[in-house]
Each structure stands twice: as structure tokens, then as C-alpha cells.
Image (cartoon, rainbow, N blue to C red; front, side, top):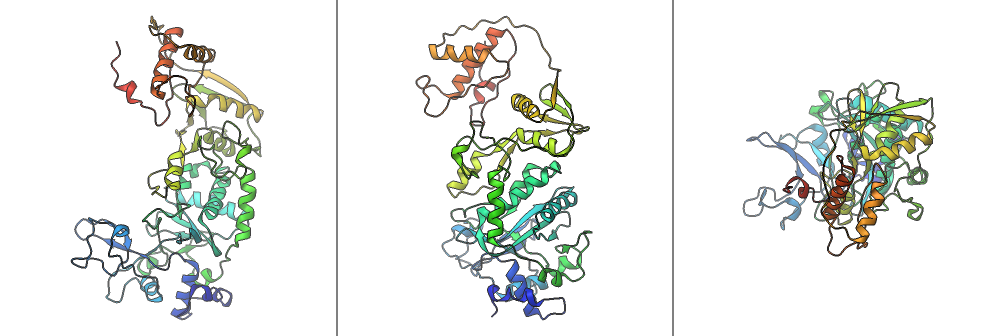
Length: 480
């Protein structure tokens, strides 16, 4: 039986649609190579119509042994996962198994040693063609081969990178993240959520799991309807899919490492500030500035001389005349890496539904909206780019409040309150290991700070609470 290692030589010989099935299967396995000891098969419930994928198991639905769905496949003591073979690939390409049943195969990209042979990037928005085209243009600028596949739904696409050896998943994902970061400098509409659309989607294999899976392309039934096929530069299917696959250049590990090394030194892997307690993606964490955000690089092309900032419930900036690179830079001011993602990954827990980046900017029809807490960073960024900021305050000033603070501040609290009141925008943070008062919680500090500020200024105050702060103390507390 031919192995994926030996058949990589077939790409040099050339395979086309007239080649024997054995050569096509071998070429397919040499490219779309994931775990060999297990694969996933698509199912569709006749009763509910629900579809999904599950690991192919020799004991599936065997009475007295299989206890799905009460017990997950990853936790079952009677696991007998089926390996990837030439027959399994043939079933997928033919669209049915030897029993005549529909067959669609999924592969788990991450190997047990947390390496991978390919990286895939998913585009599934309504603008997926434009997003994918911008991504492909970045790949062309970097001289990276990146074939585009129309997804099985027909309303999305996958861009693939194939490596000539298994490389660490974290290295492959950094490559994809860097390309996304560069692409968003020209097309910010791609969106920060695209960083969560990689296969594999984690740097480590979760305990008891397999990592995410991706459906393999070229399944016969879908292929005949123009789906799950590879597209040319005009987004039309290649007339000979096999000839195109045999022409794809695989990327070497040294090439990936050099691209990522340069990207890390420039802060262009993710391009957003780090979580407060993580050194993820930092080649030299001792050089990290206190803001956890690297100094932005210059923006090429003409920039506006002035930019109007409208203060309301957010900071509104008109999109009219705003260069894409500048819009991308401003959107990233309101984004940061999600510490919950890294905590789960460090503990080898699933990261499903935990975005890698928390994006707080809002995309309105004619404006972008940033949280008001970003004002200082926004003004500094515009100053660094020699853009004059024109601030127009459209906030409702309201009516003065006749209030008195009846509490008694501790000396250290009084110092903190006076320091805050010297500024229009301020944030009170209790750092780990800093005991300002015994048994005090972040929620208590926030209430004390808010009460003092409101009573002193006789005005309304807006307070930003951290994600883990007990905000219910505010919404459910009964105030006199």
C-alpha cells in the first residue's frame, strides 16, 4: 500500500484526471494529511435532520457496547476508532462506501505530537469572495502558494497551506495570523473574528479530544454540483482538479519560521495588545511595554490631516475618506487578546466558543464606534501619525446632582480618589498582590470610586468594569 510519504514524489511526476485511481488517492493523502489513526464521518439524523461529524468507530451503535449519546466518543471505554486507509479515501472521492451509503470524510489536522501537515483558513461571511481575494493577494505578495477551495455549502471558502513536513501547530497558526493581520491593513472588513477560523484552531490537543476537524474537498456528489472544488484566479473551478493539486508547492519549515520570526519582531502576528498576564506571541517578553501594546508601524499612503472624533455613548469616527489601513489601526485599539482563551489552552481544555481576540469596536453603516475608554490611546495614535484630532462632544450634559458622599475613606482610598478626580477619564484597578485594604474586592473598589466621583463632581459618571467584575452588584443593588 502506498504511504503519504512515498507518494509526495507523485507531485513531481504529475497526476491528472486520466491518472489511475491509485495515483489520485496517493496524491490526495500526501496533501490532506492529518491523524492517520482516526477520521471523522458525516452523519445526518433522519428524525431531526441534524447533521454533523463523529469519529468513525468499529463499535458504533453496537448494542451493549456503544452508549452514544450518553457517553461521548472521546470518553468511551470501548473505543475502536477506524484508521485512514486508501479505501476510506476512495469512499470519500466516490461519495459512497462499499454498502452504498453516502460518505463524507473529515480529517483531524493536529497530530498527537501537536504538529500538522497543513493549515486551512475558513471564510464564510456574505463577503467571503472579496475577503478571500484580499487574503490571496497577500499570499501572492509573500510568494506563498495558497489554493482556494469553495466550501461544501457553496457560500464560503477554504484557503489551504501545505507543508513538506509536519510543523508545530502554533507555528502554522502564527503564519496564518500574520497573513490575516497584513490583509486587514488593506481590507479591515475581513474582521478580527477570522483569527478563530483556522484548522487546526488550537496550539495544543485538548485532554480527551481530537481538536477541530475539517471536511475534505472533492467529494463526488458535491464536486458534481460545483462545490468543494478548487478555484482559479477568476473563481471558476479548475477544469482538471487533479492536475492543479499535483502542481501545488509545499512550504518548507524554515520558510515559515523566518516569516514568523520577522512578524514577531514587528508585532504583526496578531497586531493587538496582549492580555494582562500573558506573554503569548512575544519573542522577547521582557521588552513588552506596560500598555501591553507594541508601537504601531507607519501607515503607507495618504492620510487625512484632521480627523473628527464625535463623543457620544461611543467615540464615532466617520468612514468617509478613512483609508483602510487607518481604519484597521483604529479598530485594533479596541481589541485585545482574550485571557480566557489562553487559560483554557494552557490547561488543555476545549476553546470552543472562546474567541482568541475580544473586539469591542462596532461597525456602523457610516461610522466606526470605539469605546470611550479608548480616547487616550486614540489621541496618541493620531498624534503619532501626525493627524490632528478634532473632538466634538455630543454627550448629554444632564442636570447637576445634589449628592453627598457619607462614607469615610481610608487614607489610601482618599489618595486614589484624589488622583482619579484629577482626570476626565480614569480607571481604578486593583493589581494582584497589591493589598490596598484587607478583604476588599474589585467590586467594592469600583463602588467606592463611583460614589466618591459622583458626589464630588455633582455629575454623572461612567465606569468600565473588567469582564470578571461583579457587575450584578450595580444592577441589583438597592440604592436609597
